Length: 337
Ligand SMILES: [Zn+2]
Ligand SMILES: [Zn+2]
Image (cartoon, rainbow, N blue to C red):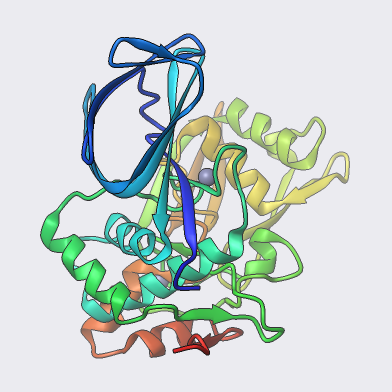
C-alpha cells in the first residue's frame, strides 16, 4: 500500500490551452487542436515528465505539484494527469479540503477518510482514477505552505491507515462540509449496498441554515428528471429520513417516484450548488416560485468537517471522530507495519 500511486486529472476546471512548466526541466506546452506543441515543436505523442516538484503556470493559474506529469492535447485543451505517491496525494487533498484553522485531530481524521475513499473508489474517469474537483476529492496543488505542512504531518501520523467494512473491503468513506446537525443515511443517498461504513448520527455542528427562492418551473424540471417522467411541482411529495434529508420524491399524479439524491442533484445542477446546499430541505410553493429552506452543506454522509473540527477542539481524537461518523466501519492499520 505504501508504494501505491494515484493518477489524477488536474486543472479540470481551468481547461488550459497553454502552460509553462518548471521543475526537473523547463518547458512551454501548447494545445493546438489535437496536437501537443512543446517549446514550439509539434510532438507526435503524449508527453511524460518525470516525478518531481513541478511549478505549473498558466492564465490565472499558479500551482505546485509533487508528481509525475503526463500531457496531451485534445480539441485545443491540455489534458494534464498527475501521478502522485498515495501519501503525497492524501496530504494534498487533506490540505485542499480543510480550513487553515482545522485542529490536528480533525486533519488526521480527514487524511484517513481521504485515503480510504481514493483506494476504494477505483477508476472514476477515462483518463485517470480521479479528477481534482468535488466530484472526486478537491486537490488544489500546494498552496498555503503552513497548512500543507500540518496536513502532511497529519497524513504521516496516519500513514497507511484506512477504514474497512466488516467484510474487509476498504470503505468508500465520504465527507462533506456540514451536515447541519444530523448526518444522512448512506443507503438513502447513495443506494444499497452500503460501501461507506457510515450511518445517520446526530452531530453537534451548527445548523448552517440556507434558503433559496427558485422558479417553480425549475422545480418541475428537476422533479421530472428525478422521477423519470413529467411531474408537476404541486404534485410532489417529499419523503424524509430521520435526519430530515429528502430521500424520495413522489409525483402524486402519476405515482412515479425517484430518489431524493437525484432530485437534489437535478435542483443543484439547475439552480447552482452554492444555492441548493444540501438534501435536507423543505419546499413551499407560492405563485410561480418555490422557497427551499434547508440545513447543512453537502450530501451529509460520513465525516462532517464542521462537526469534526468542533469535536476535535473539545478533545476528541481522530479515532473517536471516525468511530462517531463511521460506526459501521473498522479502523485498520496496515499489517506490514
Ligand atoms: Zn472526478
Ligand atoms: Zn455535522
